[in-house]
Amino acid sequence: MDIKQQAGAQSIRRALSLLRLIAQHNEQGLTLSELTALSGLERSTAHRLVTCLLEENFARRETGGKRFQLGVDAMQMGFSTMHHAPVIEELRPLAMKLSRLSEDTVFLVIQQADQVLCLLREHGAFPVRIFTIGVGEKRLLGIGAGGLALLSTHTDADIALIYQRHEQTYRKSGLSLPMLLEKCHLTRRNGYASIESTITPGVAGVGYAFSVSAITQVAFSFGAITPRLTGQRRTQMGRLLIDECTIWQQKRRIMPIALQNTSVSV
Image 1 (cartoon, rainbow, N blue to C red):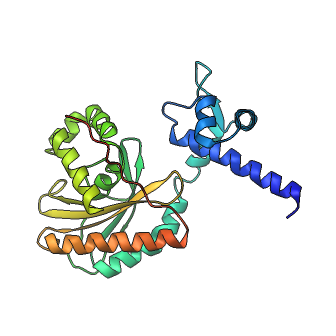
Image 2 (spheres, rainbow, N blue to C red):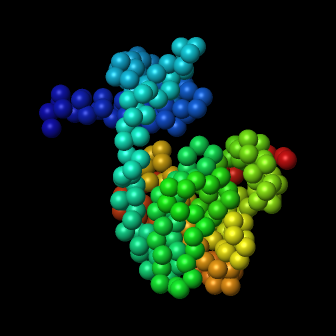
Image 3 (cartoon, rainbow, N blue to C red):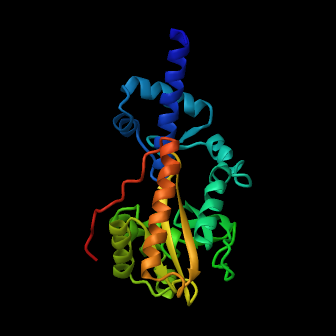
């Protein structure tokens, strides 16, 4: 590769790194100073690249004009994968392996705002199948095992804000904010989430959240009738999820999630 090609590849990588940063902070947006600080780029370089993203509609300025958010073309690229999400094809073999090893129902979910979307469901050989959520259905973060695993990757302060926005739904599921935080703390300590009769009486679950890219996290979970998913087996299934998902990440050189441990008083 010659010098011009190297420079071109470097510019592309830098632009993509800015796009990822904007996507990670899309709700509130990022100023040029924040983009510069987070990316480690020179201000002039960050300004040149974000200007290009603006011109190509991959970024936009908010109404005030100081903060950058994702543009319409970035959104359109995301929408174009909705019915054939690459992450599903990437993780389908692992989902099938997990269902074969456990013989239980395996779910794959991804976070969308304050909810999780079910991308995949694989049934194992065990005759009692679990249908707590179907492909394409959504559920509030923290209600199911996969959603609890994903919620636990957030700070306690962010969890409190999510709870505040959906307090009525959480209370209908029997969850106060202290109870939800306690479940998240236990998830962080164990490394995996565990639920029982949160969605359906007599059904338990174990979930694990992991990164599939620099900005995307998903969660796998097992669902089974409670007598089958006892305390000892939950530990075994939690360990199975951690081990298999870690192997998948290592093969793709993806860094694991750093679980948050910032606490707030409630």
